[in-house]
Length: 403
Image (cartoon, rainbow, N blue to C red; front, side, top):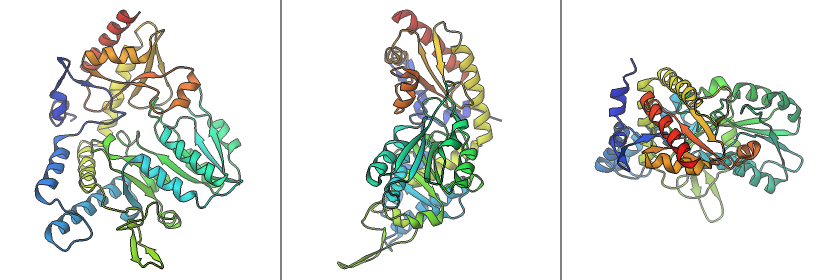
């Protein structure tokens, strides 16, 4: 059974107050909270075996190396990658995307085309624009519809023999839309194009199977999955990771170095230059253990119930408009007529409620709707219907104060 009281006990921060009010945290799309099981893993590392990895013969280094590589295997099994060395540990989703964009900057040429969806976070737009500027490749956009879904009827018109790469998020951070990535991957592969899926917003809610998806690259961040900030993963098919050049030069990513020539290490170390976020990688593994102990089916069911309830209750407020009504998960992005989202967010904060306001690093979506931004309430499995009730009352209060 899903024991919400026991689960909430795992998150110490949920006991604190903000401005004299109990904290209600609805900014999970930006970062999730961290359970004590993961916090304890971080404390254990720095207390008992803090050392650099892969380089030392002493006991602490060997213990740290073992724990770090055990975490890589946990991550591999969670995403169902074929090989653990296909899981590159990075600083997060943004760096993961930039590694791929940087690699293809040396492989694309003028006349090549890449496709990006209209629902992307800036981190899945800007690196590809930079790549196109370097290579002369052309960036095309798969448009969105009013309900926040992609215009899949136009996808085939964009694909052709010149298409080399396609980029799409699994779930939109601004709207919560679940994109049809299976269809996108299948159609793109018919034209020989590679596909990168940004899974940052999906992985807290959905357990992806990269082999079943047959995706070429899949990226995610630990801090949206109950883990620490500053660590994430880049999954890539072995043959593609071997095709791409290293992202950075330095220690760990080399096999041999002379002043005449350097040869590079094999996977995954080829893309892991320098001392990594060792503690973060180990804690990422602990976070995956924690979420799997609850079970992603239970998480999805819980969050879907919260999403339906919050949508119904917020929709009762006169003048409130929800953006993104397609098939989605855990995000309600809304505005109240004639009121700036920042003003609503400021009042909610005074009442102890954390939401996100602004363009959510997705300005093209806001431009599509011709709005400056939205109030985004993003839900997690540790939220409750009682918290949603408090949110609805607070939004009504903000509306009265600002109207």
